[in-house]
Image (cartoon, rainbow, N blue to C red; front, side, top):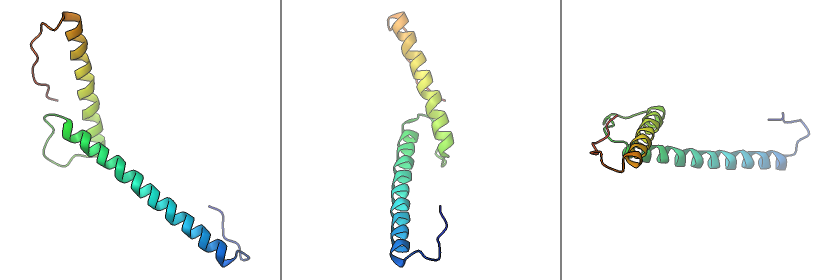
Length: 90
């Protein structure tokens, strides 16, 4: 961020402050939407502990779960769907 000079007018200072406040509000909204999405993903993962999970844990478990679902789907496609489908638990 550029330094404020002595000859900067109060109007410029107010404008800069308003821009910073607007940017901060937009960034807070963006983070809130990301966190809500991660929490929704966490609710979809089976066998996840009831304890509060970190975003990193949720994303890691989601990756593992999706990878396993893809593997099972590929296997079903190869075998014509003749396998019994069990519950997936990470």
